[in-house]
Length: 432
Ligand code: 2PG
Ligand code: MG
Image (cartoon, rainbow, N blue to C red):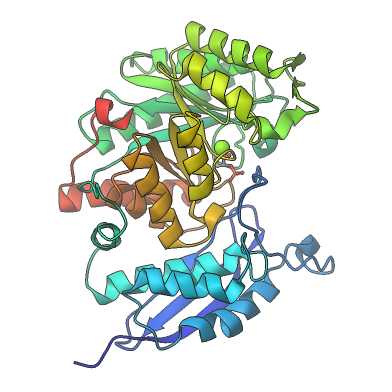
């Protein structure tokens, strides 16, 4: 049998869910199997993320075009892997990184590199006639000492949007619900969806708008986190579910967005807090409400604050590093060494290749940190994160509200994989 190789790579400038240009890349193999991958894009991007390469030419898409990144794929990146074995993802990713040659992928862009890395992964799965999640599980053997069996993740649904994802005054970016007291993914998701319906009814009855933010959650004109949480709790009750038992509240304040000169400036809530006061505020919220997870509760470089936040709340609440870790194994290592946070948000485009993403998950899991596979606020029809969450047994996924196809497509993929392949659903204790 002829050796399997990468025959061609195509790239297209397409659009994400905010109408911003992004990249779709197609890897075509010598056996004529192929697959397309689309790259997402963040709004509350962390300082330590790999670079997203944009043209900066103001005459096109307000400078947000990605035509240069597309050319990097067609030239430098293609040359670096053409003719190689696609099944050796590690070699493919190493070559892509070498072609870039920088520490943060600033020469060719993490968006162009990830498009090729992910398309290669997907095309390889097709060529091996495996569902993507199974293929991911099979290659994770080389990376993870645990390589846990595939499992459906607990969903985190962002049903109320604030911060830079919405045009309201709420300082915190995301108010999520996490259904946990269920035996299947489908029934957990149904709980989240029914609460979402009730939240809409409540907003209407209180004359608040029901338009949605970037991740499909409602974006009412509220000002404080307390107001948002109270409404969600009412919606949970109205749906017949019990908060703190069937379903929990999760927050992503995305604190780096409002941290300035060592103060957390909450304009909607009219609070200017020192790191110590911000920790006390988060503690108050968790003692008052059934909150089981807080992501980016503090700034991405406030390691001192994070340490004391972890000492204060780490034994009772999941503390998730997103901008803090930026899916970067070096930063995760530092977090583990300094006992900072206890969970890692995983976003492929923060680091830029599949191999480094697998490394970040393995490192976290091997050190007892929980992992949550995450979408970006700018998404596409690509559903690879659903398979990634299952194949790596991440335990949790956050992919927005059950509204807008860019979010729902991931949930639908999870529903179908659960039923078709009879994959077990993560238990409450294993997820958190
Ligand atoms: C976050 C993400 C996704 P963005 O902060 O967790 O919800 O937002 O993609 O805008 O960084
Ligand atoms: Mg976040």
